[in-house]
Image (cartoon, rainbow, N blue to C red; front, side, top):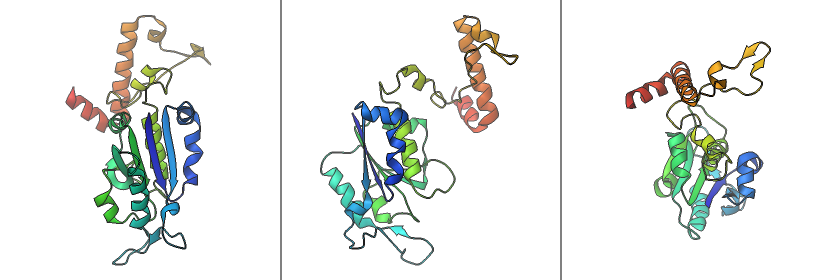
Amino acid sequence: MLRIDIISAVPALLESPLSHSIVGRARDNGQVDIHIHDLRDYTEDKHLKIDDYPYGGGAGMVLTPQPIFSCIESLKAERDYDDIIFTAPNGKQFDQKDANRLSVSENLIILCGHYKGVDQRVIDQLITAEYSIGDYVLSGGELPAMVMADAITRLIPGVIGDAESALSDSFQSGLLEGPVYTRPSSFKGLDVPSVLTSGDHKKIEQWKHDQSLDTTKKRRPDLYKKFDKNN
C-alpha cells in the first residue's frame, strides 16, 4: 500500500479535501495511507516559529530548516522513502507521467512550500524532486500537494472501479480527451453523433481518436506538436 506523508505549515487546509471522494474512499478502504504532519509540532522555537527573515534582505519570510529536518529525519527513521518532494513554483511542472511513476511508489513525502520559500539547505540535503502545478503563484504548497496526491491515488489499482477509465484519461496518451455523451440520445433537439450509437466499435474508436486529435490541436497545440513529433 502506498503511504504519502504530507508536511505543512497549515495542515488544516489538507484534511477535508483528502477525506472525500476518490481519495477519501481509497483511504477508508486501505488502498492508500495519507498522513498529514504539522510543521509546528517539530519546531524547537518556544514561540512555535517556523519561519524567519531571509539573509541578505528582501521581502517575505522563509521556512527555517530545523523543523523540516526534524520532521523528515523522524519519518526516515521509520521507513525508506522513494521520493521526498517539495512543491515549489520553480519546480518541474507536474504531469501525468510523473503521476504514473509516483503511483507505483511505496512511500512518499510531500513538503508543502510556504511563505517566500524554504531554506536552500533543505533542498540541497533532503529533497529529491521539486514540482510545480502551473505558472502562477499560490498562497502555499498545500493545493499542489492535494493535486498530486489525488492524481497519484486514482492510479492505484482498485481505487477506480473501472480501471480502463483511468487509462483513458486525458494526457495518458499524450492527447486531450475528446467530447463525451450520455443518455438521452436526443436532448432539446441536439443529437448524439450517430457513430456512437451505431454499434460499430472500430468506427467508434476511430471517431474518438480523431476527436481527441482535433481537441488537442485546437486547445493545446503544444501537446499536439509533441504528440505529432513522437508518432
